[in-house]
Amino acid sequence: MTHPNSNIETILITGGTGFAGSHLVDALLASGQKNIHVTSYGTETGHVGEILPSTQIHPLNLTDFEKTKELFEKVQPTQIYQLAALASVGSSFDQLDTVLSANTQIQLSVLSAAQEVCPQSRILSIGTALEYKPKETALKETDVLGPVNPYGVSKVTQEMLAHSFHRQHNLDVVFTRSFNHFGERQAPGFVVADFSLQVAKLTRSDSASKEISVGNLAAKRDFTYVKDIAQAYILLMDKGKTGEIYNVGSGITHSVEEVLQKLISLSGLNIRVTIDEKKFRPIDVPVVLADIEKIKKLGWKASTNIDEALKLTFNYYMNNY
Image: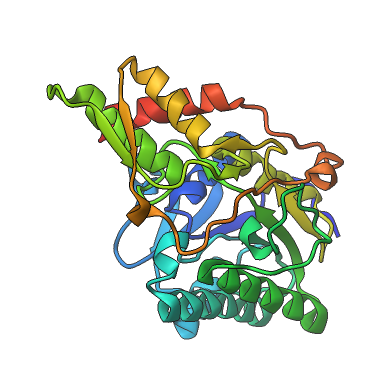
């Protein structure tokens, strides 16, 4: 099933006050959508409260099914972007129970509420490249799953739940497996955000010591600018085939070291880089690369090159932290 873009859609973005969610709201408003609702955790409005006063923000703990159902009854969404999840790979090793239980319950609440309240709605379920079994060549949607960290396990669980609701209850669900994305508003705890923040602080500092301490620089990742990711999500909501999975990435890898050196070049400083093995993850996949042929056939490809995206990101951290 495909749904043509329409200004009469009632859109709900779970996790919409977060990093990718706030950029998705930007893009939807720019496309002409007007009836947009987002959930935020607790009383925090995140980024949306600062920049999008026309968006309706609903504080909600999505692990609470009854409260989630009440929101669905109030909003009656026709499109649901399911972005909500505890998303840090690194902390998932230390918070195994929390990550697995929360991400499972969030997905179950959203799917169950949709089934009971608005079964004709379309759902975009956001997954991750970390669901795949690692390999050093491009990952295809048909490749074997085999996550190596708790966050990846929790996202496989979310995906399997959505497949189950799609098959058993005929919910209209489209799936992504999204690769690394970065940009303005990303919180520290992710590689590009961490590097940008550290380099920005050194750039503003009067200290003569210019040194940055980092973890594994050898890993290669498929990095995509978050605004391009947002456009991919809108396209998949409109044109994605129900029940199908789509990789969302650039189709190009860059080493973590290359990203760091690009950010250092933007600073104009001579920054010494030291390796701290304490910052290494217990398990770190050497290469993560997307095969994006499937989504390209729908008409999407990342349009922002990494140099421009890193410049925009670095400037954000220079001005906001």
